[in-house]
Image 1 (cartoon, rainbow, N blue to C red):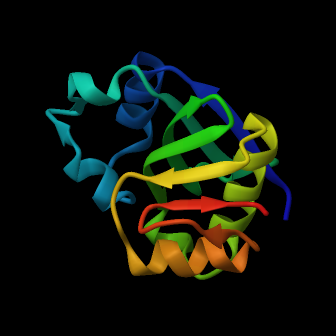
Image 2: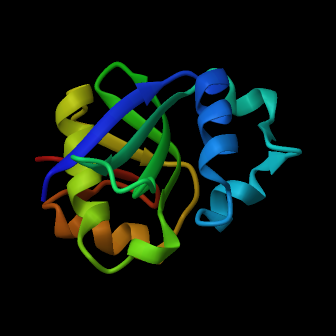
Length: 133
């Protein structure tokens, strides 16, 4: 899968999403107020994924913080029109490689996320932390 990515800051990401549209990312949209994130998410990094060449729609979005070798994922969502194609796995592998993270901390407990991280070969340390052993 030829997945392209870009790392953006909050202002550029919000502008990008205004052009892209929020409707394909309902979870992401629920975190905004009038198309803007709360101050809590403004100091995060934003990684967006699409195909090369681009087919006009973002495929996945990740909002994260890197703290040492730990990746704290605030939000990860695959475009609702492209779910079930393996894009999420490719995107998260790319994020792990790009950041060099060894551990992942999930901001919210989610059974699907737990299954996903284990499928990448990570071991569960506690309810929200996964690590490559």
